[in-house]
Image (cartoon, rainbow, N blue to C red):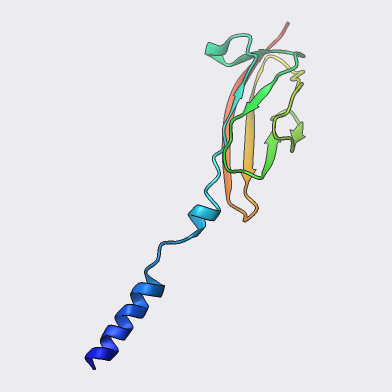
Amino acid sequence: MRQLLLSFLFVAVAFGCKKSQTTATDPEPVASFKITNYVEESTSTVMESTAIEFDNTSRDADSYEWDFGNGVVSTERTPRNVMFRQCPRVETIRLTVRTRRGRVATVTQSIRVRCR
């Protein structure tokens, strides 16, 4: 009986108590970005009809989905020359990143669009 209990304990420790391996092979993605050419950075303001540039600082992602809140979407890693043509208004930019195994992370950032 003691040998059976020790055998069970060995099997439980060897096979049932391991930490998940998914974190090493498929880490959680981190969605993040910066806007590189604000008119006023302190108020997150951009100018109407000016090409806006984004710096995608996301980590551990394989695909990217941008929604700029103005009807424009992109799957580029780092979109360039995005323009906001309606002003004055506040737009919410959403970046969703995914891994090949389906892990997802999303970040949003609001900007003010100033008229010329």
